[in-house]
Image 1 (cartoon, rainbow, N blue to C red):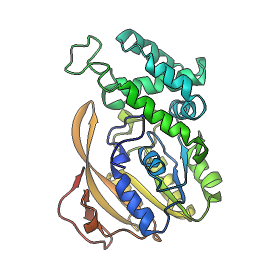
Image 2 (image 1 turned 180 degrees about the vertical axis):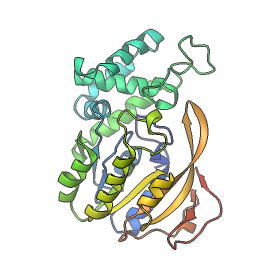
Image 3 (image 1 turned 60 degrees about the horizontal axis):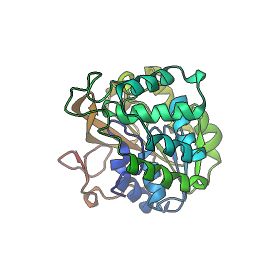
Image 4 (image 1 turned 90 degrees about the vertical axis):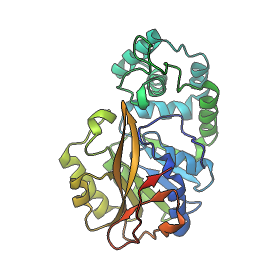
Length: 302
């Protein structure tokens, strides 16, 4: 599962954590079960696990109309989506047109919105769809608009996902509604991975944002209402660490590329009933451990 399978780019994309989550599935006898992402975004981990055969069904949800439009286009109109990618006009003029579609979602069919979301994700710096175009409007940068638009590879990824559409459930709900009305109905052999908008960086990275009180409410909801095994990842803001202070967790470093390269520290949080793999067996993730887990000295992600 080392090769990325999702067509979308996200700063600090979580697909690099797929091997660790696969280990969690193994340790908890969840291999072949269901896997859930209430905040799907690029769905990097979910797609990796499904294509790699670690899970039999994935459940994706995103409250963003734009992100949902892309994923629903992958599942329901993959041929048309791939046709547009194959014939994409990679110019600033076309980028401007796609940006206008993104800004006026209610004025366009879903396939147009889904494609514009994809186009800007691949053509903007670091995949931030509200950000600027790679190379700048004058295209004088070291990288140009087509730098991350490898047509054949992206079509391959979309076709691989569409082929497995019967193993994918997709929703465009509020995350709490999704967890309450959908997730609670799933089999016991289910792992839920919640990756909410970052506490400190959300205004730069997300279309749909949370206020501090939203983060607190979601933390309370997850800890008090989700009865299946779950994990949560966040930026390690002091408020987040406080919200989950009674749960086991570890910190790890991650490099982001959102307009500028910088490193941040994130936190992984675990439900009480989840068996955590021995971290010494996971060379790709060295972490600082809280709540009595084994300690490690250095922080690194491949």
